[in-house]
Length: 90
Image (tube, rainbow, N blue to C red; front, side, top):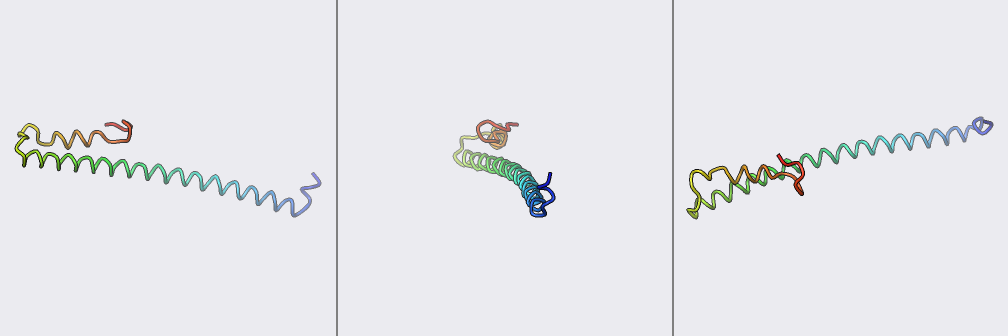
């Protein structure tokens, strides 16, 4: 324990512990930001899929191939297909 009496050893240990704790804090903050970003992108993907469904329905109505029963079907079908690779399906 004589090395702990040396002031430079104490500063070295404090420095290592500060770097380690800062690394753990920044990692947890980064993981949180990644999860938030993924949630925002999933929401955006669902919104875009819903708009694609609306556009395809409008195109079908213009072409005359869609009936009243088909209204809103594609939008809800595309919107419910959210998530990459079948993940997060609702």
